[in-house]
Structures are given as structure tokens and as C-alpha cells.
Image (cartoon, rainbow, N blue to C red):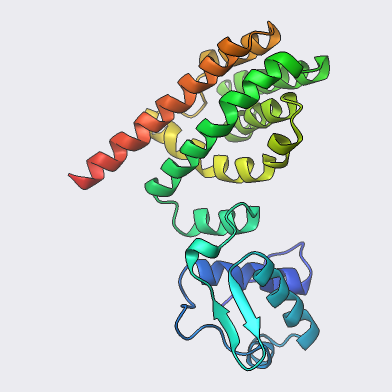
Length: 238
């Protein structure tokens, strides 16, 4: 049933495989998971390794495990989608346009303000990091870098440039979702590399120390992506 991923210890592998199975709907709220002992027998791992996997899945909000009640799958609205693993599993299994729409709404609440703060707070090394991300995007357009990763690097560099510790802590969440979101919006636009002119407008506004201009430039980019998703949703309903 499962194919374990490499570079993880046994408990982490079980956490990933069971987590993905739960998100895919292979285990339901009604019925739940087999007992720890049954899972140990099925996958041939120790009780301690399985117990650790169950703890990790519980911490991610996917399951609850109690004596005499067994392991139950929790409702989806209790899953911790700020956990990068949970979000990745959801996006890999069913990256619905509705979910991407909600993510863009989240970005709209975060990134324009982060850019505004970056224009006021960024250190010279932060400005350099944003410029390097732009340079990577240019290189990607010429086939010399990865289009997706260079685009993601740009957005993450702005979170760092904001010098706001709360925004910086969102980097893994944003990065995980951008891996899917950017691919979808670029596909809808019929491009492979993000609009360098739009990204550069954000960079120059931050470099010039103009918070209003920086915020407006990011707003423009996200609003365009929202429009693409909304159009795709409407087309799917017709």
C-alpha cells in the first residue's frame, strides 16, 4: 500500500505515508485507523516507532488517539494546514482551485504588508537577496535556472526583508503553497516564468523605500492571480 520516502527515519516515514493516506481519504472519520498493534504488524515496524508516528500525526491535527477509543481521524477543519507537511499532502492529493483561492486570499493579507514593511525596514543584504531572486528569474527565462524556485525565492526574500518575525515564520507555509499556486497561475497565463516586470516593480519600490508603492505593486500581482483563479472557477461551473 505504501512506498516509504527516503531521507527520513522510520517514524517520520510512517507519519508521511499515513498522513498522505488520511488526506487522500483512505481512512475516514467513521472507522478511523487500525490500532497501533495492527499497524505495527501490517508494516513490520516497532511499537515505539509507530507510537511516535501517531504522536506526530496528532500534533498535526489529523488524528486523535486515546485509550479504549483507538485512533480516530479528525474532521478536516481541525487539520493544521499551517503545518507545511499537512499543506503539502493536501496540495499533492487534491490541489483544488477553491483551496488555491483561499491561499491567495491569505497572501493578500500578508505579502502586501510585508512588502510595505520591507520598504521601511529592509537591510542592504535584504535588498540584495531580492535582487538576486530577480536575477534568477531572468536566468530562468533564458533556461539557466529553475522558473518556479526562483519565483518562490523572490516572495520568501520579501518576508525576510520585512524584518517582522511573525511574517518570517510563515516562510515554510508560503513556500509550500507557492510550489503549487505559481504553477497553476502560470499555466493559466500560458507562461513558464513569472512576470519579471511586475516582480521588478516590487523590488524597486522596496529599494527606493516607498512603502505605498511596494504594497500597491504586490497587490497588483496577487489581484491578477486571483482574477485567473476566479475565471477558472467560473469556467468550471459553466
